[in-house]
Image 1 (cartoon, helix red, strand yellow):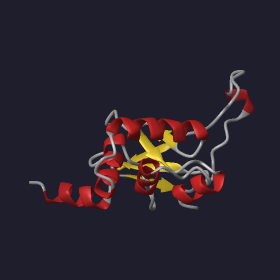
Image 2 (cartoon, one colour):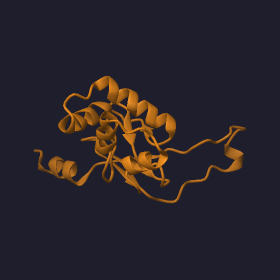
Image 3 (cartoon, one colour):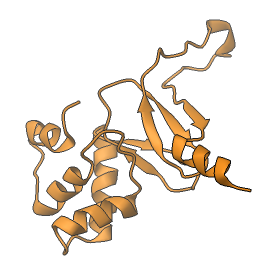
Image 4 (cartoon, one colour):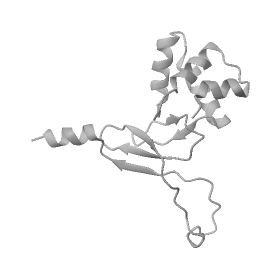
Length: 140
């Protein structure tokens, strides 16, 4: 997967200093950050970036199809820069850690679509990560 900042540069999107640090905050594997987490990462590189700029930029990137908006059980939207590969998510029900997983996409049989036009599929596997499972085993 090409980094978000490279994809944006290739599109000719105007990369201001604020937009660049926000895009760079979304770099790495298994990135699923809430807006406040993007803000904290971006502020480390550019302290004057505002939370409003982060929200506006994230919304614009979702609208452009450069970020996916992912629902998270903690109620905060998460942003996923992995828009090139079809994937699902693996979520730890204890700590909230979310990872991309690549598996065959399920197919909804025609007789189960009830006349709906299927637009997309989003699957989240809920589990317990090894760290949280270990903590649970240590409890009395």
